[in-house]
Length: 84
Image 1 (cartoon, rainbow, N blue to C red):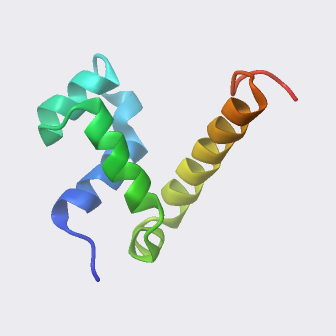
Image 2 (image 1 turned 180 degrees about the horizontal axis):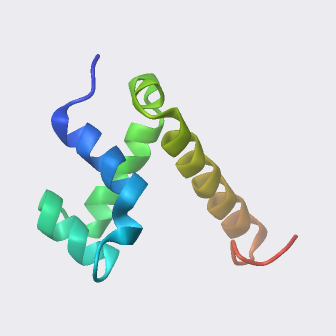
């Protein structure tokens, strides 16, 4: 199943959000009319999609690595920024 326009926009946003003025959560609410919690639920689901990988493999793989690093850090009881 092909990605929707909103799903593509989320991936595009993740590629460039750091260049936007203000907090990311505010940009998410303004652009997508979603709470930060709901946005990240949608994003995490999207990261499992082969269509998302096909659309932008670099961004999707980078986000998967970051997500996996954070999950591993939580499991190990440390901050994702702390060395192992």
